[in-house]
Amino acid sequence: MEWLSLELENIKERGLYRKPGTVESAQTPVIVKKGRELVNLSSNNYLGLTGHPYVKKAAIEAVKKYGTGAGASRLAGGNTNLYDNLEQKIARFKGTEAAVVFSTGYQANTGVIPAMAGTDDLILSDELNHASIIDGCRLSRADVSVYPHKDTTELEKILRESKHNKKLIVTDGIFSMDGDIAPLPEIIELVGKYGAMVMVDDAHATGVLGKHCRGTPDYFNVEVDINMGTLSKALGSMGGYVAGSSELVDFLRNRARSFIYSTALPPPAVAAASAAIDVIEKEQPAKRLFENVRMYKKGLVEIGYNVTSETQIMYVMVGDAGKTCDVSAELERMGVFAPAIRPPTVPEGKGRIRTSLMATHTADDIEKALSAFQVVKGKFGI
Ligand SMILES: Cc1ncc(COP(=O)(O)O)c(C=O)c1O
Image (tube, rainbow, N blue to C red):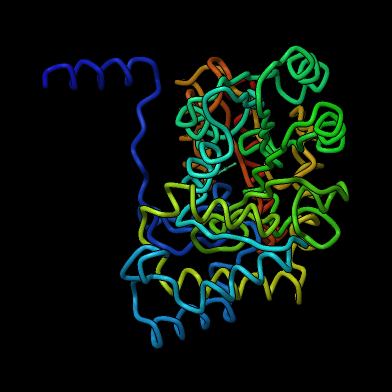
């Protein structure tokens, strides 16, 4: 076991050592860490729904009625009517025939991708796709072609030359570390032209993007074959889902191993996600989120940062991993929590401070964050 200390030393020397910081409060716009209040720019709780009274009440009621755990996998008795209601609600919200829920978004990707493509097939995956997509591709045993970020010319070239049986294009909807949006209309054109399938991972767009806040397809007014997402970000709960045709859902329930062989989500998580969709439809909290996005982006640009993202995820590029940690630590000293994102989460040399806004941030929170970013710009020359 001596190799462990050598590996850890090596990780530390490269500025890549990670240890979860402990937060002593809920996922609110201002959190408490080591007894200090910090403006929170790290949360994917974009709409603030983890603390919404209606969502919390639904979770509490579910515990009272169904208890704390599901007790079994979905197919082996862990499937309550809460689940059926949630899947029907997701399908209605997404405008599809059906939906199936997994225990995490990570499990959705690692279950769905190998179910949809295997030996003799080709998966075409954007180079900045989330790690769970990469792992799903690895598990599939299909040929995997990674295309340059959002480069549909290169994507078409690969499709044209492919002699594979089935071809699956998979892309993040909003890219998790960059905040930009996948070119879905162009991708869908290629799907039709080359007889491929398309899967979008809308983890960061669900509840946020589009006229009805349904995600990237709603934003572009297009349809995709496999509409995957998580319940763990804007929906303020836990879990992953796929929305699509009834046949697709039926097939995934039979073939996605992470669905079959994992315990169902606890009842409060299922009830909270369901309640969160009600809130999104009734209160449209994304409107408030995008007011904050506009204010924050304008501020960062005025300070001199090059910010092109149109969404709630924006980053400040630093480069070197060690320096990224120093910038993050300085921000924290000034009362702003924005963790350092380093390889392998982002490519080598592209360490950054990834920030995400919440609908519940106040103008004061945003101004405080901007003042801190003004200071680190001068201090670190970023
Ligand atoms: C794009 C994307 N897909 C999937 C996941 C995994 O979702 P979950 O956290 O629900 O497992 C994440 C989470 O970070 C993500 O950013």
